[in-house]
Length: 265
Image 1: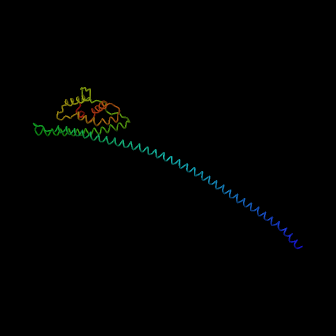
Image 2: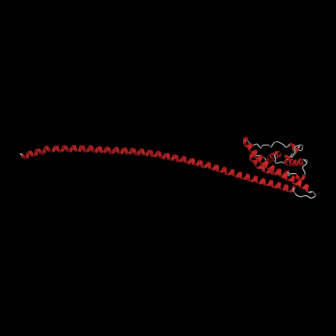
Image 3: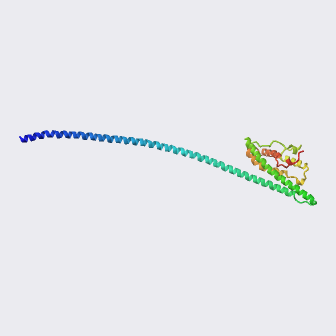
């Protein structure tokens, strides 16, 4: 009887252990599913974060590339503009240097011509007393001073003409159409050389002693050499004869022309 009771007790106890085992298994499965769900959620969150970061990285890279292209284009434009400006500056500097050199050369030539003219005028000639020589030297000194004054006046007149042309915004050669009728009178000249000859004839008729007369041809040649480059720059495309005609017309009014210093008739 005792053995039967032990077996019965054992048979009743076994189902309780089996029930606990199934419950434990169900709990473990639920925990596993929960852990799996957590892992999946973490993976999905990480993937979403990675995608967002990847999108932001792509946008940043695209923006940097666009900024780099824009900076390169701006730098290329600035380099091109600087190169053009440098070329213009070099050309302008070269033109200014050439103009200054030509002006200095023309001035030196005119001064040399004037010095030679004065030397010839002051050359001693016998048969005159001391009082006449002193008076003659004084007259020659006055002539030299007047010639230098005319040279300076011509430079001032040239600067004034440039200013007038700049202020009016045009390129007209000021003062080239008027004639010096008071000096030439009724003498007609068909060409520049003939006109200068006519002026020399008028100079001869003016009563000025021959030894104190200025070489008009030399002075006009110096004036023409100085004015021709400037006139070509201001009025390009004309013939050489047209340039010379305009220069001669301006010479007739220029204070550098000794004929303009003579008393008007």
